[in-house]
Length: 579
Image 1 (cartoon, rainbow, N blue to C red):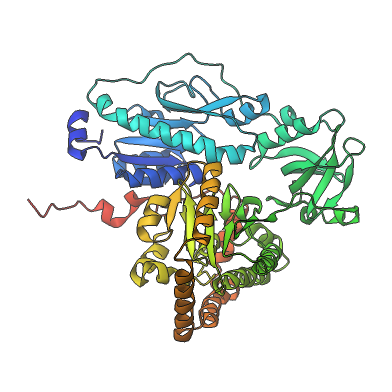
Image 2 (spheres, rainbow, N blue to C red; image 1 turned 45 degrees about the vertical axis):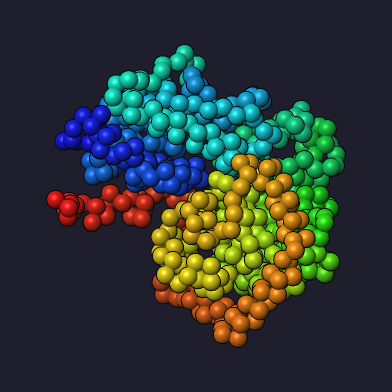
């Protein structure tokens, strides 16, 4: 209940089902963004505050006067004087009764067949409050970060909306959250609990330990005598003395287990780096190891019924200079195939997030590497835009951000999995101007006014809003499997549709007219002129923002585009002109 207002029941009648929610979170991560777009789509009033310290939380509550606080991602307790005065609902990635800060980690380590998400009310004891709602899901053989982006996120959305459906009855005193039997509080996973014993652990055990720590904090280990953390492990078809480094496969390292081997894609060397890098880039001395075939292809191609399906899956959606060049070369090879439609599939977790900021940060000259990377991204986008002998589709099974979102715009059609979150803007990365031909493709789809507004907003975009806006052409599928199956069906239908020749002719005519009005080269040159200022100019905002992002620098404040309760116009009382 807001301070100084009437009863909870009258408050509910006043808002007609819409609730004023303060999202209190450690950071604006994928789960928080998904909840933000879903709650906004449902018409709820939203503002965000980062959990910086107790005083900031108290101030946010005083300024915004929310009906409830929703905490999707916290690393410490909410102050008692906040949770004791209004409902504070915690998203816990475990089933009812589970307690502790590493619930999903431990579920993976234990090989749990099913897991869940609980929405519980904050109280003095950690994860011990009454339960407002819960949702369960079967566990998938995947990394913690992938489970979090899919199963945990979908379950959290279901639980939050189930709780909000109960909110009016809670206001009226007709319903109260249920207390459930509690499990013992489980502490965070100690490094030694998931340390790999290379002399005893089989491949499945190694992968399970790594999966429980992927994303963060990584598995503590040593490579070539250097303390490091391991990420991005996959099985590799080889064998050798357990624990032996067998060689390098692309930019990965291959290490033997007792019954096979694993491919280690990324490392963080403890004394040298504070961020992940491809394994051979993190450990340059690995160049002395034998070169092995890279059995895990991050780019692959399938063809059926006149449709070419080009898949690309880069770690965390980051597309460095070399990755862009390889994908452009693969795309040009696909153009030589006798297809009528090309579908561009990103990975299941991310379609693309644009520039590889970690590689850029590690470069001898981050400005020079930024420039090479954006040129390579533009080469890829231009190759797609200039394809005039068939139709192209961008199929977004996973989230897309910055240049990755605008890569999708290079295609003729964009289909997205329902629930995907888009961040089609650059400003959050130190006022980066952006390229990928967005000054051509975005206004072409949205119109000039809507395009300018979207680029200024800095807010995530859900699939329903993206469809209304015209950023995407369709969204469907509740999971990656159903989305990809339906994508294949629709693409085949598109390739053999009766109006295919007319659509292709219309595409060619429009591209020719657009080129005559303003060539693609002019759009590219204009964007890169602005990007050169970002990379080499006096304003170092991009470099500062990139460093903070890559090194995971703690937030000192909540960005004002999220914390609307801190905007000046929010603090000025509104005057009802109808009275």
